[in-house]
Image 1 (cartoon, rainbow, N blue to C red):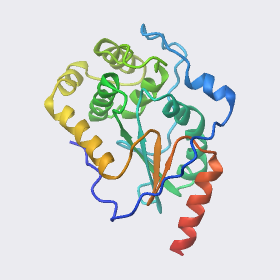
Image 2: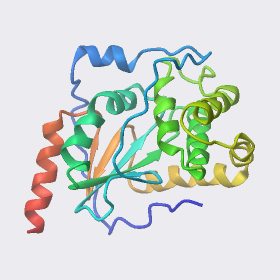
Image 3: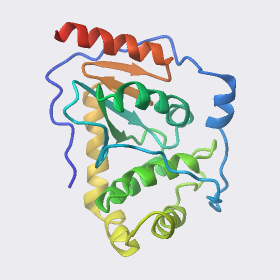
Image 4: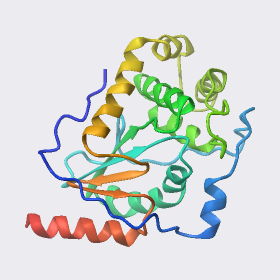
Length: 231
């Protein structure tokens, strides 16, 4: 199906402690914006990505490999997506310094599990990224309230099929209801636990893990240090 995280070379994960640095008060409002569960998607705009390979943005040959561990119900994960990810894309991905791979986590409950299964099934039909963006767009500040119910997840399939590109709902349903995707999502959680990932968002940059939403300069310093050590 999809590859798992095979091996990180036995590196030790270094956590940056001290909590998330909020980029701006306005971003909190954005991150906690409640989209109604009737899925008003009129203002939705998918992110522009220059290079994508399944769940990875950017050139996989880039010297820096980033891995984002994220829960679609997590408000700080939405803040990361809305406010920080465009900066990371501009600084590292579009410049071919880094690639970024996304791993959906399920720390926050049943709706997180549903969203993770759905986005993996969207990947099967090459719609991972628009589906990923839609899941964050409709995020509610209330957890496990049905925002990621089966009906809503299937409505996102219809939206993509109508507005973005061909998306076979029948094939999506088969995938979504299969034991294979459930087992795969469970294995992703085990992989994350084995690596010491305990919260979202966590961004692993080669052998360094940064928790929360930090200022872009934190990530720049890490990348600069890694690149200097490789010379």
